[in-house]
Image (cartoon, rainbow, N blue to C red; front, top):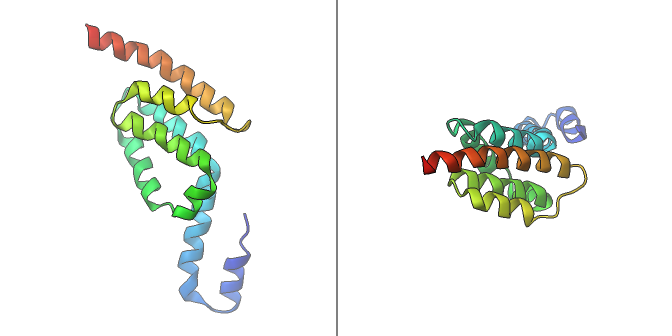
Length: 129
């Protein structure tokens, strides 16, 4: 992570810029873990309250548009979260299938999809009973 803007702001005593620089550094750090963490939180939240998904919603709202536009996988993962939030479980599979995942993220998405399918079967059975 490049902290040179922070170092430059400190060296030039531009203290008014430090908060924005730190916000950007925090968002960069979060984004490096965003996709795995978000999918994990979705997995944990499937059978519980929507606490983690709700936290992800607030993170999404806080994230600058430039970061969202630069990382299409982040947007694709968020589509999965939106489908889970609205309980559109069939839409979760559509959101997973419609995006071409990178080799780094694909195993994580595949693991989530497998776990989701397993839990989704129980959700369907509960609705029938």
